[in-house]
Length: 155
Length: 266
Image (cartoon, rainbow over all chains, first blue to last red; front, top):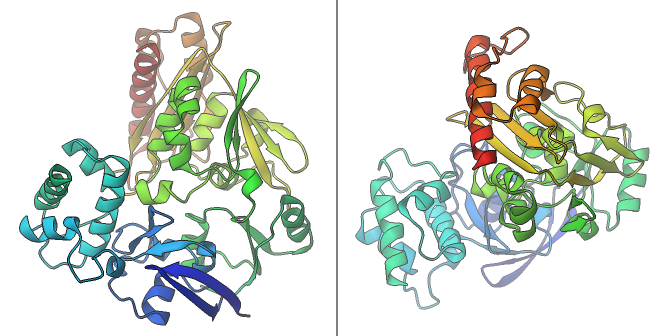
């Protein structure tokens, strides 16, 4: 059985016939070759697969692609400006060294941008709580929090 | 994940009809438990009936002395709702503490209550407030709804459409989250209605959410943190696992109940 999926991904209309059990992250990575969205734990814990679904941060490994039918999806590839300039959150992560190995970074950046959209001037505690669904095994989170604070202070 | 047939009905009627005739079909709400379970091949439904297109099941409104929340309302929506924060702030706090931000953006009230995970937060709120579960077939009071680990009074094909939460005089929810999963190691929901009677619902402690009669009696007589301290919570029948012993869980019930009473009085 295949089902037709219609999505808007990073501003582009996408249409595909897919097996219903295709996860959203699988569709993004394997069908669209948008491999910036990472699969870390594959159990909905680590948040490396975080994308925006209709503006909300969600874990794309824990949702069927068909559940996103007709939705707008934004991945890390769609965050930078069309001319390639990095998003202010990406700039802040780079400047503050908010990463080491970088595996969690796409998910962190997507969660952090969703957080600031809802709460543009979060406290440190609110940043830590807001990134609760994203795990980083390198940094100890200090510089990630600093990056989000830096980005918030500039906007 | 095993293969399944996928359905996306546009109305509740159509969804109920589909589930009625599909033997091994399952309803898919937010899927924050079901999809993970299917990925591990712990569940193998023949059909999934995705309720995502049924917008009539989403929303929050005040109806008389109750707050009516649609089954497909997301945890994040309940946590952020001005109406919920004003009428039953404890419920907004509970919803805002489920899982993490990404899970709260997708997970639903009806999904959580129908799944009845023994460590889930919402069952404590539903039982602790004495809510009524409204389904495609009938109304079920909370005391008759939860039926032990992952079991409820729902019949095959019966869907939750909304939950009606009566407005309490005061209420609060206190949870000791498991540090890894954020599920409740122990969660205690305390509510007091206008005539002074108190309900205390405990999640995370055993096979499913339950009321603690001794705490309810003590708090109905005297709604203070001291009244909680006077009750010795028994460890008998509570779960012991890698996360906590039954004795530790019994101790946490007292601590969380006390915190909930302090918050409710706050």
